[in-house]
Length: 554
Image (cartoon, rainbow, N blue to C red; front, side, top):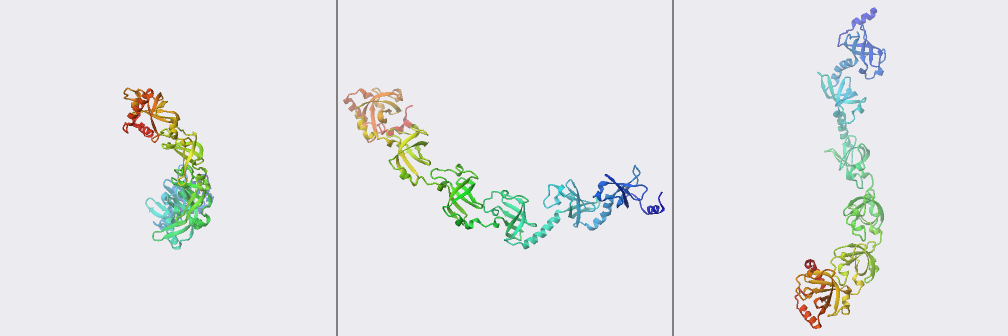
């Protein structure tokens, strides 16, 4: 039974649906809160309607909105959240006009943004949370911030907020203040905001400054990410300020002394230095000898003896090496380095070590169309020209008598230190057989040899002492010979008679058909031979061999 006093109080209350009334918490359950509003039955409120359920205790008085006076169980259906919303809506409208500022607590994350409790629930779009749209919205849930009211829809009773506009406004105010305070030379704290190929943008807590890649280090920086990362805190130097365009140029290397200021005293010409290869280019290698100081080793300074086509053939990226300072240009910040200067130049004493006329031994290192290179010592070669391989044989290519790796002996002919060339010859090891040709062959001698080559005008016969004789086509047979190959074959052994010797032209004329001639007949053949035209004559063997390329018999 209600007491008289309780009945009087109850009669003073309005229990209409939609009304807000006071209630006292009777019991706090895991999923709901039981509240007494002085009606004939208690009401229930879902626990999730309270921001902090731990603050709700039995006896606590709260405002509730009556949603239904009686449900199936005969209990009143109440809402604390809707009571607060209805009670606060008018108050919010009065203080939160569009453009107004309000504090609120982030309640939850929803699609596209956050729900914020500012007395009523309001929506904060993701793009309006911060200056840069955050990737993880969950980190904001539970935190309290100030917001700007950007839109109010009274019919739908929703509010749209922006935190970004307040931050940008604050940054603008700080930017103006910073531009007025900063001076070139100042050192300021900043945070790396963004990296590009040409530099980094640094947040100076109100204004962004550009730290160009060339102002990051006195040394080489291939990309800003080599030394910086987004979010990194660092101190920078103010280099230049453009207040009209609100641009600030920053420097990092300016905090340290320029190593080039004392470069000449630190690295005098001739000094040995150690460094690391930081860049390879076709014409040389850049070597860092200290942070901010690089020297260039040109390809011509890599070896005294080897012809290096490109630096990458002998050096590798990041290779540690030693070099010698050759020159310094402080104004252009250039240092010339050399590696070959670490060793003595073998050409300095080449003319004393390899005097003309001295004999040398070595392996054939390389063959070319004009000769062969013999290795005299490490890095020092001698060149044997094809004309210096044999006194008597016409050699078109050195591969006809030599091959790579052959151990050969030769005679030093000439040393050219200026052009770093040593000429050597193999034929000079022996006496020129033509100097003593009269001792070996006389006109009328009967000789035996093998056919070495066939040509349209005749055949070459290999004789003793490595001398070749030529049998003209007219001297092969008494009968007319149209083609040499019809009567002679390579390596065929033949007997012939010497019918002509021209020491000046280094040529011997032979006749197969005269092998059985009398002296008188031989003299007649000589007369015929002497009457031949130059193109038909027993031209110098050198010229005859030269013509083989186009006239050799097939």
